[in-house]
Length: 265
Image (cartoon, rainbow, N blue to C red; front, top):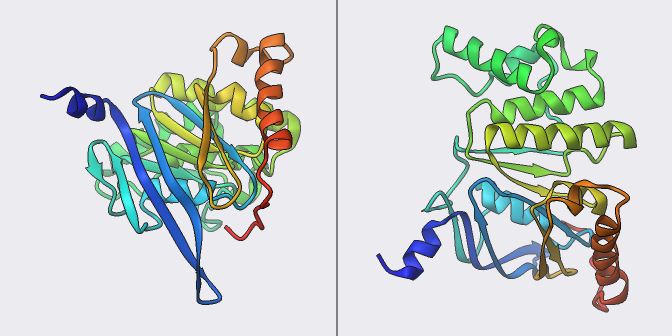
C-alpha cells in the first residue's frame, strides 16, 4: 500500500478541493471554495466563521443532505452520496416530533431492530444523556437543554461513527450552554464518536475542539486550522485559553476580508 493511500485511509472524513454554488435569483453564487479538510477517527472538530460563510452547508454536504459540484467528500473511505446510518446530525432546533414520547423520538430511526433491542438501545442512550426519568414525557414537557439532550440521544441511537452538530446549543441560556458543552464532551469521550460542530461561540469552539477550523467570509475558504492544547483548551479563564481566544478574535477583527458575508446560507 502506498504512503499516500495509507494516509488517506487514516481519515474518517476526507474533503478535497470541494466547491459549492447556490442559485440566487437565477445567478450562481459560490458558497464554498476549494475546501480541504481531513478528520481522524475520534477527533472533535469545531468550525467558526462569519455568518453566511457556508459552515452549515459544509456540514450538510458531509452528511449527504446537500450535493456539491466538484471535489471529493468521503466518509469512512466511501464517497458521500446521501445520508447514512453511520453519520448522525443534530440541528440548532431539536426537531423532536411533538406527538411522540421522548423514548419514541429517540427510537424513531431504529425500525430494523426488534422491540427488545430498540427498547434497550433507547434506554442506554437516554441514560447516556441524563434523561432516564423522562422516557414517557413529551417534548413540550422538557426544557430547551433537555430537548437538545434528547436530540443528541436520537443522533447517537444508530451508533454512528460520526456525529455532526449544527449550532446545537445556540438557543440555550449561557449556564445551560456550558453544562451541555460539558455533557457533549463527556459523551464524545465515552462513545469515542468523531464529532464536527459548527458554532458562533468562540469559547465553545476552543473548549470542545481538538482542532478549530477558521473559515473566511463568503465564498467560504479554510483560512487556518488551530490545534488546541488539551490542557489550555479545557481551562476557561487561563492564560492559554485567553491566548487562543485572542488569536481567533484577531483573525476576524484585524484580518477579515473586505467583503462581508450577507447571511444567505
